[in-house]
Image 1 (cartoon, rainbow, N blue to C red):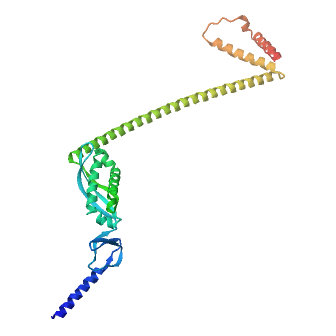
Image 2: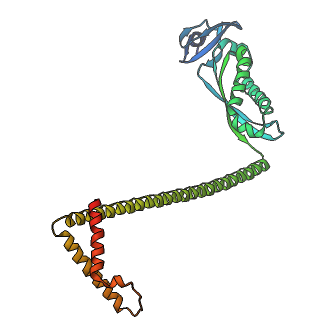
Length: 308
């Protein structure tokens, strides 16, 4: 191979390298930071770009997508001096590629370290029992501190989530015993409340039964009294009607004679019953005279009729 051929190959290689360094394609949702002769020159957005070979170079490449960075598990001490291990996840996004390149050496590492420091500070201000309940408060506090600190870094911290809280074995056993005791207490309370409600229901039922029975007895007495009153009224009305009919019959022709005959028959009948009894009776002499007795009764009947 002669010198001319070698020179041609060298020139061709230089041209190829120059073309490769001149043309630059930036993917979607990405940003390239270009330096010219070692100084910041521009930020290339998504698309095709041409640069000056050997003078311009891509110094940093950033993705503009949201990133999830895992924060390793670390030991934290709560307000009541209980050591727990907490890990989490940071969600952030590059919003200024220039600041993300020159504002800090490694914004991912810095955000992770700051999140751990802030988390230890927040956990140290709350008790163990509230560390599980106030995860939202912990997340918000970490995001607040990170957002303030990361502003010069050209990134935006979107949110922070506590992934897991690991308790020491002794604390877990104590909490399990506490929860078991609490469940047993609630069971006893629920059982006692059920028994109380049952007794109240039984007593209310007995009370209502007593009221119903008393009201039934009262209504029964009222009904019986009304029945007896109606019975007395009907008997009185029937008796009055019978007396009126007898009086009307006596006023008819021959009525007095019929009454006198009826009285005489009854007198003889009853007097005969007295004679059959094994008793010794002393009677007035006038009672043995049937005619006088009948006459006396007829006279009384006539007087009564005349008054009527």
